Amino acid sequence: MNNSQKNILIGIILGDGTLIKKYNNSQAYLKFTQSYKNKEYLYHVFNQFKDICNMREPSFYTFKDTKYSYYSFSTKSLPELTNYYNLFYHNRTKVIPLDIKSLLTPEVIAY
Image (cartoon, rainbow, N blue to C red; front, side, top):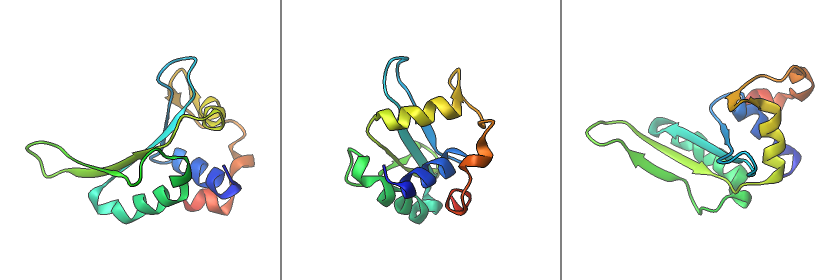
């Protein structure tokens, strides 16, 4: 991952982004979901990470019997994402690292 991807990753983890580890000994992957009204933003973020995704474009979902729809994408499972998982998750719960100040940049805050 390049520096811009790292900054965007930290920014979206602090917001709506989720890092997931399916098993304790597996690598983490990023999952990012936004409602239909935020489609442009989701596609923008997807374009920043498409080189580490298994998909050509985000998936679109609609809940049955509702008007709610959303877009989502996920990345490959990678050791570098696992490092961020270990930084931002404790017992599978998202936390703010104690040294968050050292991670903040204008790009991180923008995302």
